[in-house]
Structure formats: structure tokens, C-alpha cells
Image 1 (cartoon, rainbow, N blue to C red):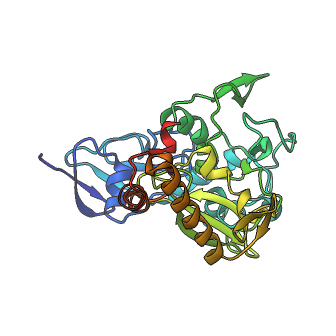
Image 2: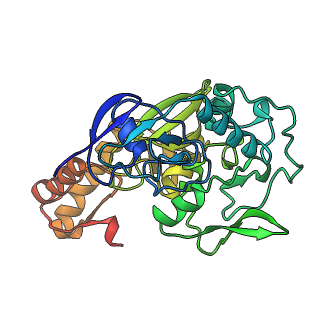
Length: 346
């Protein structure tokens, strides 16, 4: 494949045909500001932040949606571009309040970072009052209409990544706003993961934590055998949020409803902390040695009285392949039966 040669900020760069200016710049370590753009989505072109100047073009173009061309000369920073980007930010702030101190996204908000970078001040850009909360497609997510800048990341992610099409944009009295279709929503939280501002927040944990105050612990989801990578947000030794890891792993930061929101069991006071053995018709706490001796004794008794095929075992999708292999080996080689099945078939 012949490469396309172009110049970005005076640097000679080679890029594959079909690559956008933004992708070519980032591959060369040249940063162009974005808000609506995301690597996993087709270009949305709603924020106006990624504009660049291209020789021969009368007006700046959106780098996220403009493919590279042979001999193209691109400028990513100039006084004119700074004015245009600041203007785009002011337009976004016309529908977004400057309530950063109380916003859940403070400290990791892309809009907040851009406003600071371009020195946009609050004067003259007071957003009109809107309801603080609004019913969302799922009770697991809270929607803040006043914080939404209609970047359309959530709508695009719902359509392109999940294929659910549970979100859309509509016109209401001359104003664009999000509309939700609860019957299509699968509560995956993909929209929550990709929202760059505080318009969508998790609605499960009553306890919250700022990004710079929580400890993010990388781990593997245990709900099935897919091996999805996630990060547990831990504050005061308690999981307060779960997000997908931004890496090229099997899930590419996506999670299902269980992986993203099903973490309350971790701190549940109903969790067993010790083995239970039934004595005189009631369960009593014991240690592992006694529990395992009881299981071994009952297995031996059933095998002696009724044969090995009177025993069956169910493996779990929440275990690793290695654990499941050892389990079936135990059933066949130690117990002596082929009565082995898996919960995924139930």
C-alpha cells in the first residue's frame, strides 16, 4: 500500500490512505483538541474543536472528518484557530452551567480542561435554567440536562457500538434535546462511559468519589468467561463505581449491565465470610478444614452406596478455563463419573 505524504505543522508525515488528518496528527504525536471525537466512533463533527487550516482551503476544516491527501499542508495551531475554538467553547457553554465544584465529573471533564486551556471566561455565557435531573432510559443512570452539550457521543455509541438505538436527538420548541427509548435500552452504560462531561452519572452507589480521590484498581470481570477488563473505583475501601478499561482488550472499555453496575454485592452484609455446615437442621459457621472433610466424606459415602454416576458436577462460567479444566478432571479421574455440565447450558 502506497503511503500518503503530507506536512503537519512543518513536519513531513506519511499516513495510510483514508486516514483522517486527526488520526495522522496523533500518530505523529501532534495533539489536536477534541470533545465529540472518540476513537471507537465514526466522526460526529458536533463540537468544532478539531478545526485545522489546510493550504488551498478557504475555511478551516474538521480534522476528524477530513481524509489526508498527497502533498497536503496542515496547520494545527494559529491565532485564527484559537479564536475559532474559543468561540466553539463559548457556544457549548451557552447551554452548560459553570458548576464545576459540584459536578460529578470535576477533575476529569474534557470540557473543563478545554475551557481552562483556551482561557474562556464565564462572563456573558450564562446557560438558561433547566431541570437538574431527568428520567433516563434506565434507573441505573442519572441524566443532567443542564450539563449536556449535545456532543452526541452517547447517541452515536448507543447506535454504533451496542446497536441498541435507545438514544436520539429531537427538536422541542426550537431546542434540540435528547430523547430516550426505555424499551430499547439494555442498561450497558456505554453512553455513560463515553460522556465527556457530567451529563450522565452512575446512579447505583450512594457514595461518590472524585477521580483524584479514588483509587482505580484494574481487574477482570467475574460475571462470565469473556474476561472483560475493568477498573474498580475505590474510596474508603469501598467500591463506588466501575468503568471499562481504556485498552485494546477483549471488551475495548465496553461492559454489560452486570459488569458495570452489579458491584453492590462486594460490600453486602449478607456475603458469607466463612463456610457453613448444617448441624441438627441448621447451618453453623465452621472452618475450611471441617467443611472440606465433610464434603469428601459425603462424596465417598454416596459413591460407595450408589456408584460414581450418582454424583454430578456443574462448572461455572465465572471460573477460569484452568479452574474448569481441573474441575472436570476431578469429576472424571477422582470421582469416576462423566456427569459434568456447565452453567452456560442451563
